[in-house]
Image (cartoon, rainbow, N blue to C red):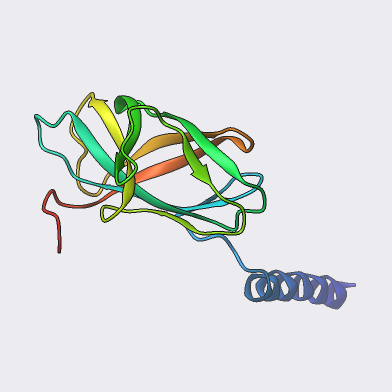
Amino acid sequence: MQPSFHRRNLLQTSLALAAGWVIPGAKACEYFGANLRITHPWSRASTKDATFADVCMKFDEVTLADRLVQIETPVAAGAELGGLAASAALDLVIPQGQETLLSEAGTFLRLVGLKHPLELGRSYPLVLVFERAGAVSTSLSVDFGGLRFG
């Protein structure tokens, strides 16, 4: 009986390793709602006296049009749209079948009423609330220093 026990362990281990090669996994910076994927929410580090921070990310694999209607985070009092679609109200349309990129060069989210500086290399809880997909828990990465590039 001893040899079959070892063969069974070897077979289980082999199947587990093969599954890792065959089944694509989610990347560390990907978050999934019921009808979309959110990729890499990030911001720059802020200064001690900053009252806001801009947030960038990407929405894709949108199977059903949705709207981002609220953001919850312990680091800020609220959020609004900044950049090309600036608005004090947070109501971002995310069209079906398209990629929506929030970037410093276009439309982005702005966390307002910062409660403390965002520190380089840290990550903070960020909940994105959608009209259809509901609440999606993500992590806001602080990836770059306060200087803008380009």
